Amino acid sequence: MEKVHDLAEEIRKTGFQCLMCGGCCARGEDDGMLVLVSAPEIRAIMDHTGLAWDEIAEPYPEWIPAEGGGEFTLAWCLRRTEKACIFLDEQKRCTIYPARPLICRTYPFALEEGSLSVYACPGTGHTPSCSEAETLAEECIRRDSAETKDAERTREIFMTMELGPNEHAVVDSEGVKRIWVK
Image (cartoon, rainbow, N blue to C red; front, side, top):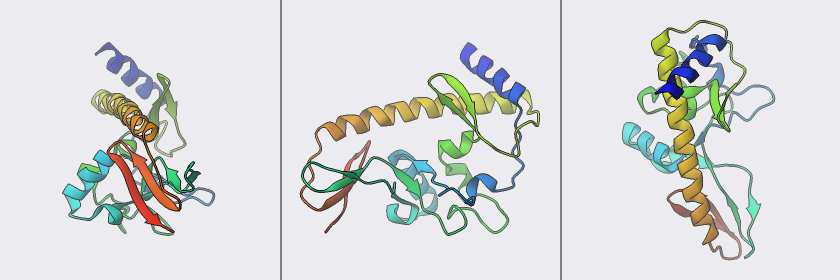
């Protein structure tokens, strides 16, 4: 619990309160606004919305050549419109808020190699309550643990993956999901 307390203190010192501006869910001029999601997070969104996997997520757009002639990627991201995440409504509210991914729950914070990283956000600098800071700290720790576990499982699957020529696939913690064959 000491780690949560220390992290919460760091978050309080940095300051953050969500301004509900939708900026973290919208595309900037120079970014693709890619929200990486794990297979379990996609399944949670499926349960919450009734949408199919491919209505929620798309393969991460950086393809890596495979030895057998196919290509693969190691991540999924939430689908987007030209302007924002598909789950951001016209009032700049998240339509999947209870099932939103951990990256959305913790933004603008992330744990990277045990240290707190803070990304650009207009909500930084605003003092959160102690309970808000503790909740964010707990979510950051949960996210870090989930991402580590997901990466380890994906790595295990990747080590045994075989792709045929012209196959395209996403390798995730559940397995190899073939997308298409050219």
